[in-house]
Length: 207
Length: 246
Image (cartoon, rainbow over all chains, first blue to last red; front, top):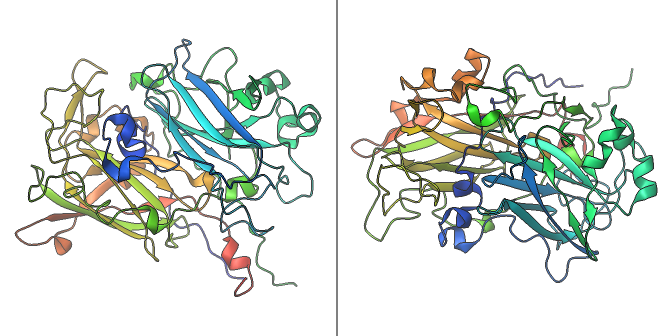
């Protein structure tokens, strides 16, 4: 075998700062016309995307219970069949009408974020054949966050799958599982709030 | 003995010694925004190893030229004209092709074009302050811009940010996602900046300081700074494990 040793160090992280929108969602910062008028990841689905339409909205709360109004949030998920639109996907061909990635700012006035996407299919756990409950990977960056935070959103109606999920089951503090499960609103709409600190602090992952 | 390559595994675990911890009270914004409980470590499955793909066709021809991408025809922004260039690689030193790099920065007066920035430094009508590019086949990238100015910020009573450019990096895997900042060689504000000093390892700070590169300046026109970027590496990549043409 050929050994490819680690010879460099990943760059240290620095906070995204209060003006992350200029680079990542410039229309939010007031740069309305740049990049053709829309940011990357602003639209996750088109009319041909396969799967059940869902929407997700929520807020990100700091340790005082105040919603943060200067962050960005990114989603990464499988398509309706449980396949990723990525060169690393070797289990099959994913839906060409679904990139699986989205990015939105938290609203500058209310702190709310909103995504329109589809419900992902189930994917295997690590290299096993065991399936995980459907989930969406989430990444959060903002002023005051020194290293972007990874979490996951699971679905409230998947009671059985959630109960058997290998990641949810390995949480030492089972009383924190609820922080990863969205709240159902009307049909196909979910609320997923993220709590950075304090009571009901969201589970964040080192992945 | 079998001589198979290692199965396409996860990324090298993150070295938390070089990253800032979540809670860094000298950088006050971190105090209420830092999780108190430990991160839960989980292995890398397909959702962590895979990541979104960005196509060159999604970008415009001047997206990596901040001197041109917001300026009126025939005009250009005020400030020191610079090229920032380098190579994006993984921790094994392999160039990362097709990665999305997004940058944002203040103008030469230290003012951001953002509805929330009220600093007294003036806006420059010819400067937007954002750029993006996709890395070439060996991970190479370049931007043309103007050198951002330092500026005061509300933290301590008299804290100033050194000149810096924010970098958002997307490697092929979602667990490589990283935002960081680039500083300029020789800037005396670096060592007294509370945000720089959230990084506990002083040597690691050096990885964020771009080097003045006179060899690549354009004489009578533009200075050059070299800034190499490193993201987490995989023990082996998907591509190395696949038979040819698969």
